[in-house]
Structures are given as C-alpha cells and as structure tokens.
Length: 232
Length: 113
Image 1 (spheres, chains in turn purple, brown):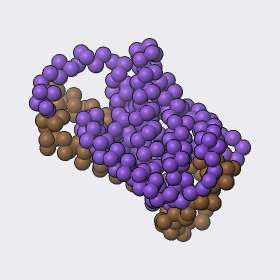
Image 2: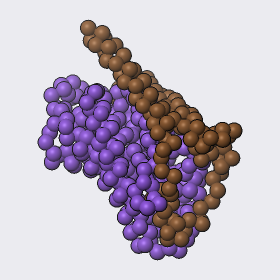
Image 3: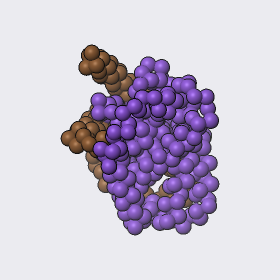
Image 4: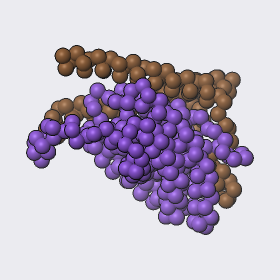
C-alpha cells in the first residue's frame, strides 16, 4: 500500500508529514513506558521481521498481490507505540529501496504505521475482552484485528485521497475498490499475524506485550501506588 | 538471585532475537525470490481506476538498491535476496538503535518511568 510520490498533492503530503512527526514523537515518549529496557533488541527484531515479510507479496486475485503491513503484529508483540515506531523504521529504510515516495513518507507512516498499530490494537483489546481469558486467545485476536486493520488502512488512504488527490477519480469509486481488494489482503495479514504471534506465544509468551492483557495484571502491581506519585 | 534470573532471561532473550533474525534473513534472502510480482492492492486500484499515471519517479530511483535489486547483480532472484539481507540488517540496526536510545533516556530520568 506504499503511496508513491504524485498520487496526492503537496499540501496533503505536508499534512501527512506533520501527523507522522507528531505521532512518532508521541510514540517515542510512550514507547519508553511500554517497553522493558532489555527489550530494545526485540523491537529491532520486530522491525527487521516486518521488513522481511513485507517483501513477500502473495497473490490475492488475478494479477493482484498484497503483503503484510505488520502494524498489528508489531503492536501485539511490543505495544502499539513501539509497534508503530517499528513500522516507521521499516518505511524509512524502504525509502532507500525506492519503495514508497519520499514526499509521501509521512502519509505512509501515518497510514501503515500509526493507523494500523493504534486502531488495530484497539480492535485487539476489544476482541480479547470477549474471548476466553487465556493465552490461546492472543493469536486469534491478533489475527482478526490484523485482518480488520488492512481495510481500515485502505479507508484511511481514501480519506487522504479525498483531501488532495491529483486525479479526479470519484472518492466513492476509490473507496470501494480500495476497501474491496484490501479485505482480501487482510485475510493474508490476519493469517500471517496469527501464526507469527502464535509461534512467539508458544516459545516465549513473556515476550508478547499484548499477552499481558490475559494474565492477571492487577496482582503484580503491588508497587504501583508509589510510581504515579513520583511521576506526577 | 534476582540478578541471576534476570541475566538468564536476558540471555534467553538474546538467543530468541538471534533465532528470529535468522528467520527474517532467510525469508528476505530466499523466500523473497518466490514472491508474487503482481501489482499490490493500491497499484491495482490506481491502474484500474485510472490514476496510476499520476505517480512520479522515486527521488531515490538511482539508489544502488532501488526496487529491491542490487547494482551490478544480474540474476534477479539473487539481487532480490541480497537486497533483502541488506534491508533486514539495516532495519534491525536502526530499530534496535532507536529503541536502545529510547530506553536509555528513560534510565537517565528514572522518575518518569
């Protein structure tokens, strides 16, 4: 879904850039609280893994392919803020490979990083609230949320398209086509995300940030009252 | 005792990260050669609906690794695999570096944790 230069006009690209800078700044602050400081290499691994799997385009229909976006995968593994940062790192490195426009980098970080990680993680949390409270629910919820995040990202692209397209194709036409094909790509996203999270849960459940939601978090927070007092 | 447990866990985490990196490198180096070359969802929509022509050439189209190839390597599958290895390595280095800085800054200001 990498937007090349030229699809969207300069003001819209600047708006995407501003959103991306603000979002990345927020994520940098928040990631330091989400991420255990021993886990920096884990976040690096998540980014590297997303880069690798984004290379693996799978066919979804005649003459059309899709690839993992990875926002929900990263968000479930290392938390939404760190996860969005992982995707942002991937997109910046991909610019060296001439994948995704330079002026569109902010738009791409906003849509494929921030929107998928945060909207997808919200869906993930909502699913965990209704699924049985055990670790086996984590890959299922992650996969379903990942699947949903792809058409959501397609809709987000269309919103920017509505703001500043350089062509005059009707917004409704673009929305229908984008969401339609990305529902199919979302199936692949969901399967890859579910399998990957399942593999990490099976070997190192403690390394899955989003799995903490199915443990009993209240019992391990005996020192919690002292921290907000000091932090405020 | 607590430090021994912590050391053992971080040792296991290092092993996990190394194993994961190996998987990522294999995917990027080998499996990437079998990926579909068809246009992706956005490219397909742009072509079908008629706004593909508004795309401009990439500013870094002259990069030695542009389009997941490697300058001077003719075999397409080898070039893709090689660019994948470069990309995965670079992404890990940048990612781990950024996150090391983020968490180090927190250690410097412990009250904000």
